[in-house]
Amino acid sequence: MKIALSQLMTMQPLQKVVIHSLDCALYQVSIVQDLCEFFVTDDKGKMLRTHSISDMQRFFLGLEVESMALRQQSAYDEMIGQPIKEDSNALEVPLAVKHAVL
Image 1 (cartoon, one colour):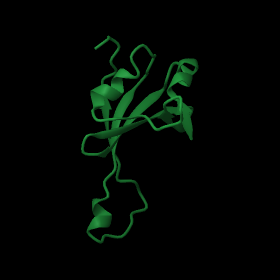
Image 2 (image 1 turned 135 degrees about the vertical axis):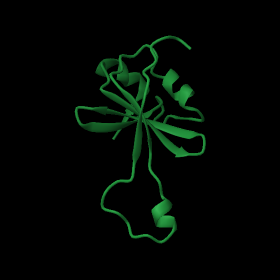
Image 3 (image 1 turned 90 degrees about the horizontal axis):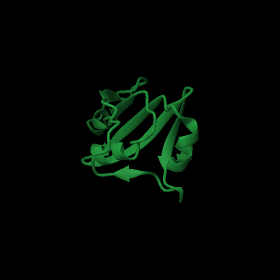
Image 4 (image 1 turned 45 degrees about the vertical axis):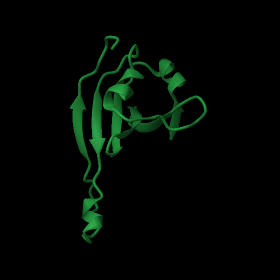
């Protein structure tokens, strides 16, 4: 599911913001609210993407965020011919929630 960045004001506090590492220096973001995950878009419906974690965190300054994490999934197993795993190989690292203007 998707949600526009401008709609997040009405959903505060945001339970969890997840910054997804897609590739070297390419990030996308989702929020987890009431066990549902929403990918964040701009007001035109385009997925919100940046080239740094700090740039992504700036979108959430001024919003009440309970937790923030960086998530990365590896395609390495598939690339070396290993069978597809039933469990996720996602690595999730907690990030500090920034409240001050950068």
